[in-house]
Amino acid sequence: MSFVRFVVKKDLRQLLRHPLILLLWAGIPFAIGTLITLMSSGGSLPKAQVLVVDEDESLVSQVIVGAMGTGPVQEMIELETVSRAAGDARIEEGDGTALLIIPDGFGDAFLAETPTELTLRTNPAQVVLPELVEQGTRVLVDGGFYLHRILGDELRVVAEGDTTTATVTQAAATTLRASQRLKPYLFPPAIQVEAAVEDANAFPVTFAFLMMPGMLIMALLFTAQGLGITYWDEREGGTLRRLAGTPTSVTLLLLGKLVAGACITAVICAVLLAIGMGYHGLPWTRFPLALVWMVTAGMVFYLALALVQFLTPHRRAGTFATNLITLPLLMAGGSFFPMETMPGWLAQVGQWTPNGYALTQLQAILLGTSNATTLGLAFGVLLGVGAVFFVLNARQNHRIATLS
Image (tube, rainbow, N blue to C red; front, side):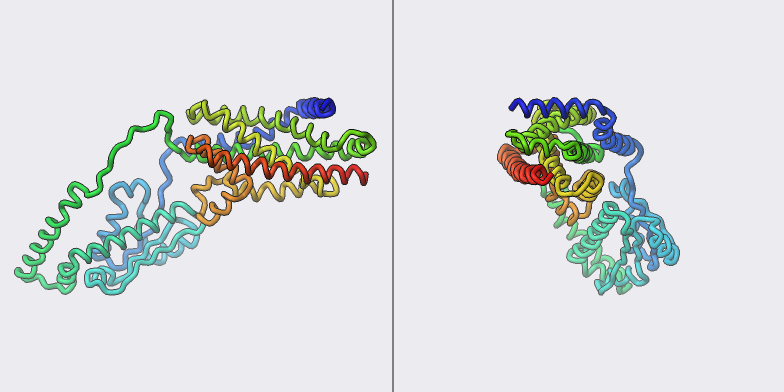
């Protein structure tokens, strides 16, 4: 084990001679996270800009437009009435979240409950806001369906234009009876909501918080990638070749570098995690477990990317290969965009990427929603995968040392 201690001290001395490199591994994710936090912590919430083409100009179309622009919805949706040509042109250029077209004759068709349709075109360049508009439109359509189930006959009378005194009186009486029948369910609502005492450790989950685990995992991957490149110092310096002619196992070199990497990773993670938890006001009791999880995941990333370095013929190819692997993982695994804002299918894929899996568990630890069974299984998965990568690295180390 004296050789392992020697390798640990040697690697730590070499890494600490270049503090700028360590600063970059931690600084780039920290800078990105800080900028996003500053941008998301001030100003008004983003609104969906909906362009409305009202070709019907009826009472029904006005009710629809009014329903989309009043109440709590108006905090999330901004309506703008435009012509058909202007709406088509602007949505094609990506100017706006969605284009809603109410066709001519829609009001009469709705009152008579005959087939008709609303056209909604969304901006493909946006993800969350178009989904909000689409769901809101579906709610309006469902509301129209249930309105016909209750007052369908009265609406058809209005559509037929029968405004005689007897007809209007009968429709009013029917509407009154329907409202009296529904009153017990609506006033007060049949569903009772019980207020629960808020957990003292709970805090609002903001967009800035959702970015925090992704930034921490990004720092892990950058650190793992940088540590993996240090293997070229051993290969190019002839360390592996000399070890092959001694009784010392090449595996001990790998073990020593792994311990040194864990020390560096722990320091970087501790600093970034402390800053993030302090800013968001998270309970410090979650700090130790989060740090252990991050260091464990970081060492698995380290072993995986080091194996990629072992399999490449020279340093430049190794750097290119690890970049080719790391950047797509960061994109899909929730580091650049929180998984909560990604399309559903992509978020499902991202959760099963190595960094996405680590991010999901880290977020649960920070939120205090993890349980012993799930977390124990997660640690078991990490340790099992890490052991496999360690064995593969050791074999590749020995092969390179033998061929050198």
